[in-house]
Structure formats: C-alpha cells, structure tokens
Image (cartoon, rainbow, N blue to C red; front, side):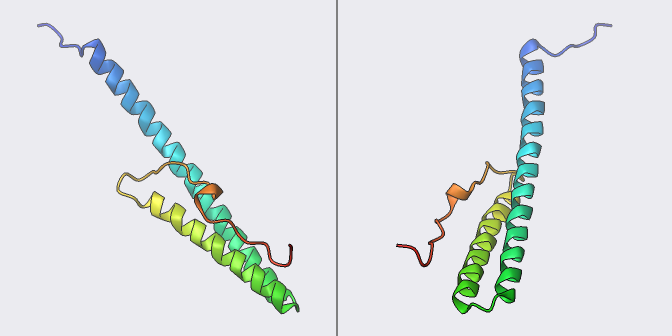
Length: 103
C-alpha cells in the first residue's frame, strides 16, 4: 500500500496558515495589553481628578479619562470582531486630546 503524502504546495500553505494563526494571537495579546493600559490610565486620571481641589484641573483630567475609555472601546471592538484579532490599534487612530490653558 502506498502512503499518500501532501504535495509541497499544500505543506507550504499549512505552514503559512500556522504562522498566520500565531501572528493573529500575538496581535490579540498586543491589543489586550493596550486595552488594559488604556483602562488603567483612565482609572488613574479619574482618581487624580477626585483628589484635586482645582475644578479646572479635575475637568481636564476627567476629559482625558473619558478619552482613554473611548480608545479602550475601539480596542475592545477590534478584539470582539468576527475574526478575533484585528490589526494594531494605536493612539494615532483617535482624535488628539486638546491641551487646556496653553496658547
């Protein structure tokens, strides 16, 4: 009886798919780290806003915390997309945060 062996092109495709799967998991892990970092930053900004006696500073800190939550939501949407892992999401994918009091 002769053993059936896959052709070289099939082996190459299998290896390419395996590498793609690994890359997608890495992208998902990177996005999970970004999600955690944005939520941690939002929490720290909100906590700092609650500690200050300066209402203008508190307002700016809360706005920045909300921006971090919006960024986290974008990352979360990528993670829950149909394919499971989405492309890298960076701070450049969102609107800049205005600086108050300079100008």
